[in-house]
Length: 189
View (cartoon, rainbow, N blue to C red):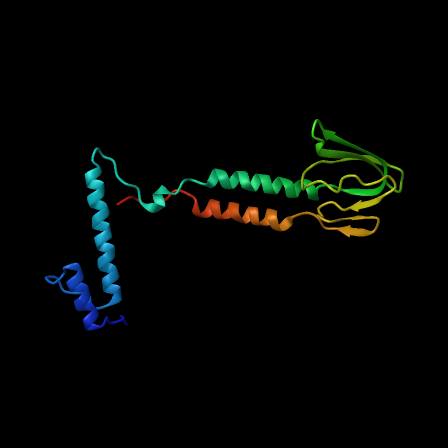
């Protein structure tokens, strides 16, 4: 069932747009169809004027291919999540050495030697990224981090400092880029 337009509105539209010779549309759907046809004809006329075999691309065709951007976003976010999840530590910090880039003392990293309960020592470097565990833990700190978990515990206190919402949002943005930023597969008019 089409929505009928009031008669006085149709007359005013015909007077304003100079369509007295043509029958006025009787419904919103027919008015939209007429507008779509008019815009299609308009684009064909512009493309004909461009000449030389050139044509003006449609809006969908003018969106750049964002698939490479999406891939880079997924690689970055996925790598940070993987680096954090792949760490497995369980033991006491027996050595801690912090070094920073000079001359500004920024981008510090801490090299830990962690001794497990069965006296096996392992080395872990906490760098200046979100994937790293806390830096500057004192010697004697009990640290426990299970593999594939994003949280860990320091002296029995759970630490949840990984920004999973940020990286999840970044991956969602990458998915949107991959889905909607691809070139059109439709044939041009």
